[in-house]
Image: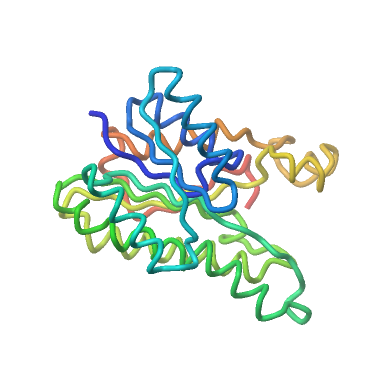
Length: 240
């Protein structure tokens, strides 16, 4: 059954793959962006041109009142039953040299942003007796990574949050899971890590594709995954 699905950071390389996968399942996709609203609008237009239902909207997830207002406007069109929180950022440094701003900025988008977007959605969602909450975590949130104490903490926090949400709302037909990608192809990864280095680190000897992560997300957002909840599923080619 088609649902309304909201994807935060929905025009990033991974977010766009997730948005396309959910649209291909027939869902109406609400593509969130902050600074990249132009990319989100272009993606929504592309999906609509292909006969899908898609809309872009802007919100600064670190501004909770503004995010709540943006979500309330979207809810005028009906409840959102699928949330994929993909928005995130990183600002790496060893902890001894990490500034407060670096710590707060990463936690604010990845972890606090999850609360900011979910809080207005949750009551309408459980009112339908069906929902899928998906947080895009990271293998860094499971195994840690040098220079990423802020990022790993935020991504691990998402895992704790979905485990708790799964306990709170399973009886209402709402599942909550985390997906923890490893090294996934993107322009940033290509610039920072040569293929030879990836082959040394990852047992599968390659980076993952955004579409592989998106396929997992689309499955977890489907009817077929109704008995899977409270899980953190790594998609990492054996890393971690």
